[in-house]
Image (cartoon, rainbow, N blue to C red):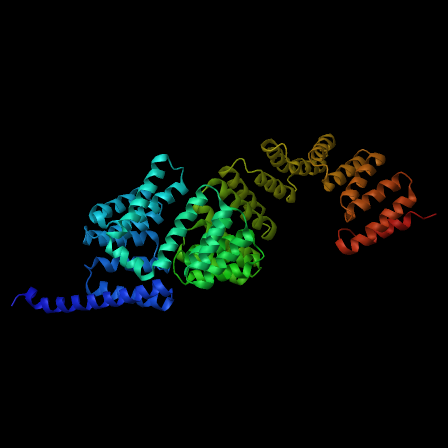
Amino acid sequence: MSEQTLLQPIQAANSNKAQESLEKARIAHEKYLIGQQNQDLQEAIEYYVDAVKYDPSMPEAYYRLATLMWEQGQISLDTAIEQCKTAVSLAPHNINAHLYTGFFMKLAQDFKSAESEFKSAIKMGKLKSARPRLILSQSILQKINNKDGNINDYLSFVYYFLSGSLMLAWDRPSMKMFYKNISDDFSVFTYNTIGKFLEKFKLYPTAENLYRKAITETNHAEIFYNKMGDLALKNKEMDLTVDCYRRVLEANPLNREVLVKLATVLQTYFPENTDETIDCYEKLLEFDIDTPQIYYELGHLYLKKEDKINSISAFKLALERDTENPFYNNSLAYAYSKAELYDEAIEHYQKAIAINPDKEWTSIVCQALGTIYAEVKGNIDAAVSTYQAGIILDPNNYDLYLSLGDVHMAAYDLDNAIRAYCDAITINPDDYRGYSKAGIALWEKDYLEEALVSFHKAIDINPDNEYAHNNLGILYLDGLGDAEEALEYFENAVELNPSYTLAYFNAARASQAMGFINDAANYYQMAIDLNKITQDLDEEDIRTRLHKLFDI
C-alpha cells in the first residue's frame, strides 16, 4: 500500500474538520457583525485558525481571518494584505479573495492595486458584481478625498455606485446580506458614502449632522462617532474630537486605530491629561504591535509626570526591542540624567552619538553629553572634545558654540571663550546671547572698549535683557568710573526684574559713589531683603556697606 493511500483517510478527516471549523467560524462571524460582541469575534478567529490548521489550502479562512485579526489589531495592514494574497494564489477565481485583497490595499492607500483587484472581481462576477462595484466606488471616493480627483474619477465613482446599486437584483449573495439586516447595513453604507461626499466639498456642518443622525438610526454608533471625531480633528475642534473617540472606545475598547488617535490627540493638545494618555498606550501594548514606539511614548509621558523610575523602565523596554535605535538611547540617557544616574546617561548618549542617524540631531546629543561632562563630572577636556565633535557634525549649531564658550570660561580660558562666542555671533548676529557672553569674557580680559560695544549690541537686540543692563552698568561704574551712566543701567535692570538682588546692590554702589546716601541706603536695604530669598550675595558684606554710609 502506497504512502499516499495511507494518508487519504487522514486528509479526508482533516478536510471534514476544516469544513466544520469554517462553518462554526462563519456563524460566530455573522453573530459578531450583527451584535458587535467581542466574545463572538474571538470565537470566530479561533475557528478560522483551526480551519487553516486542518486545511491550509482553504482560501476563505485566510481572507476572513485577516479581516478579523486586523480589526482586533493583532496583525498589520501589510500582513493582512499578504494573507489575502495567499487566498488569491490558492483560488485565483474566488471573487471574495480579490475583494478582501482590494479592501486592505485601499486601506493602505494603494488605490491603483486595489482598483485592479476590484475590477478582477467585477469581471468574474459579471451581472453578480454588485458588491465589488459598490466597494470600488468607495475606493474611488477615498482616492478623491485623499488626492485631487479629476473629472474621470468623479464619473467613475458615479458609474460604479449606480451600476452596483442596480445590479443588487442579480447579486444573490449581496441581496442575502442586505436582507439579513437591510435597514441597518445599507443605511450605514449610504450614510458613509454621502458623508464622505459632503466632506469632500467642505460641507462640514452638514456632514456632522448627518453622522449624528446615523448614530441614532443605525446600530453602528462606533463607526459614526469615529467619523465625527476625524471631522472634528480636521476642524480643530479638539474637545469634540476627544469626546467622540472616547465614545468609540466605550463601544469597542479593542479599537486599536481609535486608541492610537486618542492617545495622539491627548498627547498633543491636552498635555495635562497625562494619565489618560498613558492608559491609552498601555491598552495598545496588549495588541503587541509597534511596542517599542509605544514604550518610547510612555517613557516621555512618565517624564512629564516626573516619574523617573517608570520613564527609565519604559525607555529600557523600548531599547530591548530595538537596541540600535539612536532616539531610544538618547531618551533613556536623558531619563538617567534626570534621575542623576550620570554614568548610565553617558553610556547611552555615547551610543546615540555613535549611531549618528542625522548630523544636526547628533550635534544636539553632543551638547547634552558635553553638559554632563562639564557641569557634573567637571571633566573640562571631555566637555570641550564633545562640544567640538558636535560642531564638526553641525557647524551652524549656535548653542554649541555658546556651550563651548561657557566651558572655556569655567576653566578661565578667556581667549578660547572669546573665540567661541565670536564664532556664535558670526553664525547668528541677531541673537543677543552671544554678545552678552562675549561682553563678560572681554571684560575679564580687560578689553573694556570691546566689552562695551558687545553689551550695547546685546541691549539693542534685546532691550528687555536685565542682565546685559546690569553688566553694562558694572563696566561704566568699575571700568570707566562713570557712576551716573552706570546708575541708569542698574535702574533699568531693576525695572525689568524687581527681584534682581545684584542690580539693587550695584545701584546702591553707584548711588554711594555719587553721594546719594539715602538712595544708596534704600538700595542696600532692598538687596538685603531680597538676598534672604535669592542668597545671591554675602549679606554681611551688604550690611557692612550700609553701615559705613552713616559713619561719621
